[in-house]
Length: 436
Image (cartoon, rainbow, N blue to C red; front, top):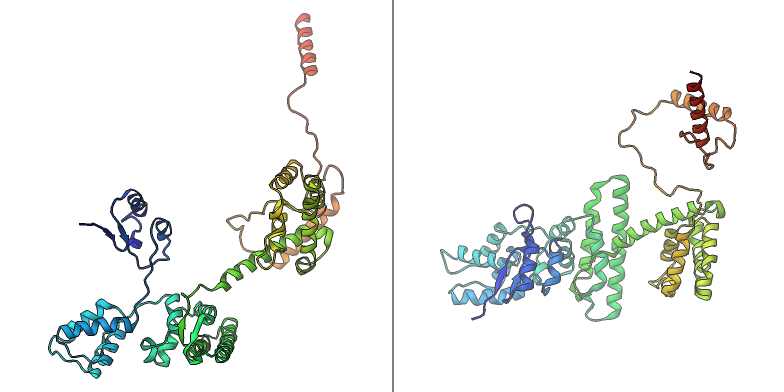
């Protein structure tokens, strides 16, 4: 007889109750001689990321009404229950496709009589409807789902899908509507393109409403945004999805845009004494030419071109991090960086040559840290004016000289006496002792 160990709710290993449980389970999997089945409800939980590398990742989707209906009708027939198929649909939908809940409702409602009408099943299922919290992936799938699952949903029910998370639901709809094969198209490519166009127009209208909501704090427009951003695209593209709903790529691109904006700002600041250009000019006109000027000597001359590249970087006050950022930001369309095509020996020689020298920069290499505790309330206008006047007067009094220049180090006299001074003091001491 074969044995198997079932570990249910492994995503519940948390906190002080089961500290180190995931690591212990991984160690058990490494040395086990029997199969271990791990089950969880939240596959994207952070604690499952380490466990998934030691398991076969088998995912199950929520069963459809058609899949559950046949098995439930067979059980009802064997138990002698008279339930029409439409009534069974209402029972399954009321339980939200939960098989255990369907069996529980059947045993409870048929305790008195073995027959159940459609009206009675619909009323009972509405009272016993199971409330669940849908995730964004489930919402995206249900927005475009066809069949019994959404056939009886009202306009309010469809708009409620948007309000599960109205901040990210429009992004999921926008990311996944192109992966749906609409039933209304009937396989006709022209009709499919027309439906895609109308759905895209509706999503754009929803984005305009969202901008009005965010900019003017007019949150009363959320129901209108739900219609444009979720209900209308779902009605136009209702069918079946060709793949699992994907996460919105806009979020990653938006994060990359913010990162690149900061990097370009740093480049414009570092090169400002040479280029006298704005951030936009650096991005549009300088990046590609600086990239070629930095990489071309290394490609054509190899190790001999390292000093030319270092000299160019010093001329524009660029750091090693700026070099890497230029290579990253000037690569378009997923193409590899030209620096990655260099010989590893040339890369190593360039790194050694740059780190070997001292590079003067007209800017601070360390960020200025602000004090944790504020010094008090802000100065009023009168005190601030007096403060600036004092600064200007002090600046006028202090002339420019070598002693006041912070970039020039002055030799400080050592506090210890020299050998000649020690000899003089010792001689003086001897003379005094002889006189005595």
